Image 1 (cartoon, rainbow, N blue to C red):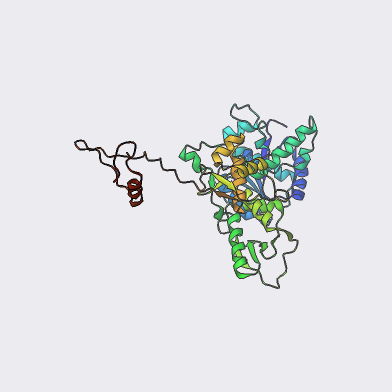
Image 2 (image 1 turned 120 degrees about the horizontal axis):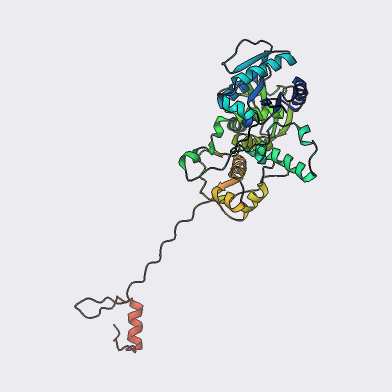
Length: 404
């Protein structure tokens, strides 16, 4: 890797496209660029001609307004902003190398120094496993490692990032920091699918969800099935960004065929994945981090994606009621592990806040048996009719007080 290596991320590629793209990058030039995670990249590469291209372009620019983008298209000329470098298809090595040179000129000085590999005391890339790229090639995970344990840790770390993101722990006592741990499920594909499933149950027929390229999902609660017409990577990219009106719900005609190439999966698994992808280690808005949580039922973790520490969290909540804050502290794990698992369980109704028991009233001290006026004789409290009758039958008591 040379001193001018650029960190490049991509959006919306499936495994086959990613494999071809990595072969292409290996021929651009030694150390010209390398695949990096989305949050650590210098530049992003987006193909706007695929089914999610325009949506991914808008979403990436919204999340990273100062990052240069390399955009490929068969009909360039739109250039949405000065930080976007367009390349006409088919993309050749010379054209792509020229685009990388333009990107280097667009990088801020600080980012350029960082891309040269200069050490930074605050930069932990290459250290914590949470920064392993979301879209790292599987071949890279099979590269020679010191031992099998190290390889397994790298694979586990990548899967952890896919499921819970890399959000650092927040100071939950700081209102500003606390606001950053929440997201609104209704603004994501997660919320749209939940509304579509509810509507499909009401009308007793399947419902589909369309994007700009046609039908993306068909949902049939009667069979507990969903049919997805998008690749796993494309669906994940679609689920991680707010929909912003780009997706629409419609009724599926009874005799309508499923989209070509659509694959079936369970609704339970789909809703679980969409919640993890939208959450990225955050909580649904309105969740109280200090309210005790109870596990109503165990999620079927043998058939669902298992986020990090899920078994330990579920086991703890099944035995006792702990708040989200206390759960992370008790298990000694990052908050995002707890928040992501809660978000997925909440989407399927596996958790609920416990009812806070009413505060027990302090016992009132017993009143005096006798009322002692300050300037009068001792007055006995009134006695019931049975006690007065019993007193007459038994005669005077040992205290010499005559019966009533």
